[in-house]
Amino acid sequence: MTPPAQPQGVTVEVRDLRKSFRAVEVLKGISFQVSRGERFVIMGPSGSGKSVLLKTIIGLLRPDAGEILIESQSIQNRAVRNQYRMAMVFQSGALLNSMTVGENVGLYLAEHGLKAPAEIDVIVARVLESVGLKGLENRAPSELSGGMQKRVAIARALVVEPQLVLFDEPTSELDPLMAVTVGEEILRLNERTGATSILVTHDRELAFATAHRIAMINEGRILFIGTAQEVQRSTDPIVQRFIRAELATPKTQ
Amino acid sequence: MFHNIGEILILFWQVLLALPQLWRLRHKVYDQLAYIGLASLSMVCILSLFIGGVLALQTGPVLVEHGISSVLGGMIGLSMCKELAPVMIAILVAGRIGSAMSAELGSMQVYEEIDALRTMNIDPVRFLVLPRMVAIAVSLPVLVLFSIPVGWFGGAMVCDFNQKIAVSFDSFFQNLREVVEVGDVLNGLLKSFVFALAIGIISCHQGLITRGGPRGIARSVTKAVVNSIVLILILDYFLTRFLLYVQK
Ligand SMILES: Nc1ncnc2c1ncn2[C@@H]1O[C@H](COP(=O)(O)OP(=O)(O)O)[C@@H](O)[C@H]1O
Ligand SMILES: [Mg+2]
Image (cartoon, rainbow over all chains, first blue to last red):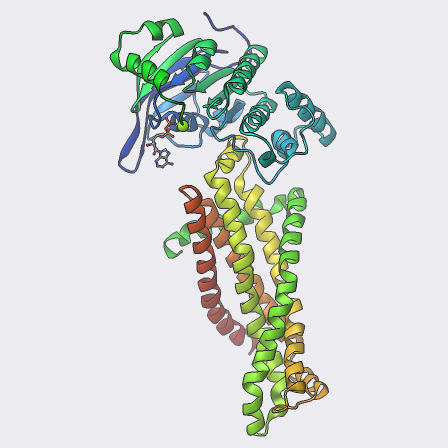
């Protein structure tokens, strides 16, 4: 499977990324490259540093060492970072609870004054419909189920028209049907817009169904990068153990 | 609080820098104003009525004994507007509003809502802290402005109805009018403005640095309220010194 060559996505390169909290080294030198429009899945046990990795890429955490490059330019430089549209769908959804669903989805456009209010309403309605939440604009996020909140979070990311989207465990805590719906949504977003997608998940089905390539991460290091078939055929004992363990244990964060 | 003083000052500076963008956030300010005002107004009135009352109750009989009960109006009038109204209402607001601010921002921090804002290039200081600071800085002096006359009224009622004091309503307010000047009321309002900034910045800062789940939020709320009250009382001393010096 080769990634579709689409104009909108960006290349991402992570070079020897390190990040510690106090004395604990969480990322111990992570390197990988993601091409334009690729769906790159990161799998690994809880606490292996996946969320920290995503937060470092999006710029919420500052790396101790190493570099992140977008289109071959380091995004340590704010000006470079601001040239590209990026979005992150948080593990928790992270919707603003004091605002309605519609306000959450339209927030980026409204706050940056990118569109007139009436236009924003139209866009919000359209995007919500595209994630199967038509007409829920005026609900409070707390009134929605976990799966619906995740889809609102995806809608909020869609509105940014991102060139790079990061998903942190988009299907955890969802029932299998909802997980499939959200998985399809992620696939459609990627295919329609060509946005480069980096996806952290425990969900093997989601990983094998969506990934162009899969990276296995353990204790802050990458063990293996390859296609779904290559991962399944890998003879690396830790990778094999992880995949079997994944089958045996329930999904957690 | 004290080891964070640098961070708190930086946050305050960032709020000042964001001030020019206030107009775009006016609706958020209105929301906060309505919330603070409506939540506190009835409480302020009850509190002030009783503060004025107890002040009269404690001092009245002593002054009567010395035959100078005629100064009651001026005394209660001054203590209410220069000291008790600003300090007590600030403590009330620290408990009601400061706690709510730190809890709200704390839960937004813990549940990654603030991270989400950052990924959308929305500055949390401008979006969350600024409207709260402006709202509290406007509403606390307004609440004090309500508190002062209600406190006077409470004092006057007690002086009039209490048999041991028996200073009539009219003579109470006559003396009050002779003694209390507009400057004394402004003095109290200025104090309450400074207290409002202190409560707002401490509570917002504490909210933003919250870590560690629901328990972290609870810890932040406690810290925000306690630190606000301590700072109010410390600031009160120095503000009083300063205002005495200026008014000379
Ligand atoms: N802000 C932080 N401060 C201190 N430690 C953190 C912080 N964020 C994550 N960690 C630690 O980093 C490790 C990896 O966390 P995380 O990336 O969330 O794991 P996961 O792979 O499950 O997403 C954990 O041990 C966690 O305790
Ligand atoms: Mg995680």
